[in-house]
Length: 111
Length: 114
Image 1 (spheres, helix red, strand yellow):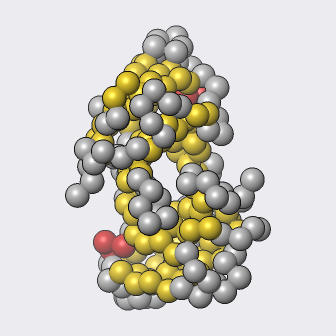
Image 2 (cartoon, helix red, strand yellow):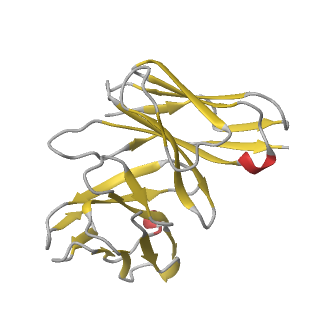
């Protein structure tokens, strides 16, 4: 099965700081999804990457998929308290439409 | 906007009770999913359905069953609740559009079994 490793497991930053979360797979990623979860709530879709080298941005959040399609990074510029939550990466298994998920990265942003 | 709703945000049940968790989506999505989320274990797929009356086991189906009688509704059933089923349960739906399968999640049901 495809294992997705996220790092770090948790992150505490001061408001205004930049940060990066990584998602690494032992196999080629077919569709890499990033989600955000506010504590105690459901997941909100952020973006999806499919092509090697692809990069997408949403407001101050940028995600990139490496050329080999085995690692993705999510970068937040000038973090704000509203960025706090759990960030999860998900990826489809081969040709399946069903994603598996990493264990998540918990982000706290201190004002 | 896609909306996925779950019948309860919080639920407390006793060991041995039969528990129904309901999920409804309003965007005519073919695919629906049930996950549980536990600290340190992430999201684990219990069951999914790709059409009415169709269901497939996920990674951890033991102790659970599902029902999909209508396209918009997907129910998760705990036949005899046990304390190790205390968890956050998340429902999701998706539709294959242009190869994309991003999922839309409900707000979750936090179930406590005592």
